[in-house]
Length: 131
Image (cartoon, rainbow, N blue to C red; front, side, top):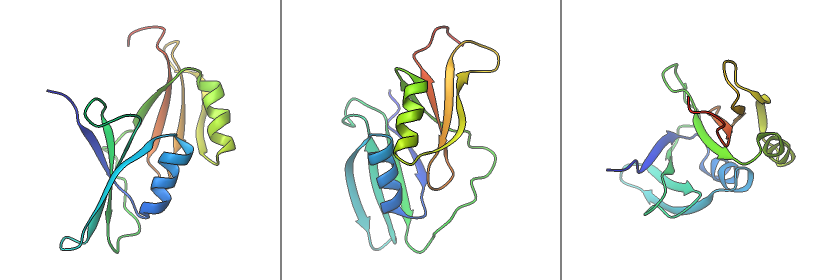
């Protein structure tokens, strides 16, 4: 078994694809409209779905906003240098919601950015310790 993808609902598909591709550096892997169901699926990721877990962006036609609720936490992306990644993402227009620095009870360096729908993405430096 392996984890295939995580799905999040987005209010503006083009804006979300732009964020994940042009800000976070993912690739648009595939996209398909389902007119009978009135939704579109777009899959983005850092590599081919046959070898990598990807992110499914679900756009339900006519729905522009979702309540995120309090059960979902965040997505996580590993980066070589969190400080440099934050500055690069900031220059691409990302909203930084937690600056780079060590996590509260450890040494792992983290930061958080927010996508256009308010989903948080944790940037994690290559781990110095196992949680």
